Length: 399
Ligand code: ADP
Image (tube, rainbow, N blue to C red; front, top):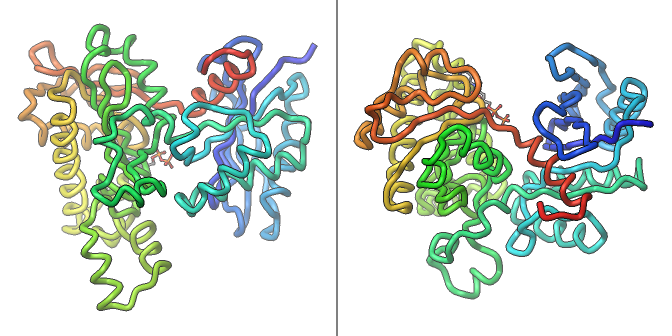
């Protein structure tokens, strides 16, 4: 008998990341069979895959004209050829926007597909690619159950005060609200808090998801209370190439005085700002940390300064703080940035063990016993949340 498995898909504009989990029972991290990505879509696409121990399993190239559907077709062929003991029972997708109505994972059907299409206008740079992968898989493997897992869902229970803009009720009704994103990552971190923080996991925790996209989430009892991203993935912290918080007056100025169009602003705010815009060098924190340039140093100073300000705002929303958790590319891998943000937030009574911070591999609490709050690193695992929630939905339980 073949082993049942769930394919997890995270489809973006230039890459499709995937993972495969054995799903005979509820998937755990140890059920990962392999993972990888198709990168360079539209330029020179290639498929890379690794097994759970990091050994390369695939390294294939495809012609530049290969479409999304062609590439997912190659992936399905590759799975069939290289993992012939597996039977795919479902594909779980990361879907950036579920709007107000889709606040838990759902099996994709015609009606849900239509709803998600309508939500594309709220996330035009992400949602269409998520849905392109859904459509392509539906064509290539019509019998496969597909499941949508939403990046907005974890924030759905926040108060109206937190999720509303000071705009007319009409505009709020139309969907102009603060949704919040990175919910699959926060969901995973929330599931790990009891093991890592013990009793404090029930308290007030701020999670800093510092990756290419950057946001923070204030949790109370493992639930989202407030978050730094809002209507779009642009708000809050400066990111690799996104601006983060900016006075809307700047946008009016750029339109009126510089004749910038919606497309120009999109390009500026999503692709040319953040660490890249500030430094003029790179969107990659590693390159900035290595650089001697004044601009790179300023970009890093700015990132840590804004992190402290956002933490302050989230502490206010929570009415205090018991723990601070770092995750995602920068949060998991850069002791220097963790140390600098902790130093900036020392007003919280943070006291860190430098050795523990420097040597942190995997889940690590690196605050000292005399620190007023616990500080930890927890590597995120959005793919596992998608596999787990898909499994639970298939099993007929709550996800
Ligand atoms: P995404 O999944 O959105 O692509 P990640 O969470 O993988 O983002 O984060 C990617 C970012 O993490 C990179 O752009 C890089 O700046 C940063 N990063 C990765 N490793 C390190 C490191 N050792 N030191 C500093 N930054 C790092």
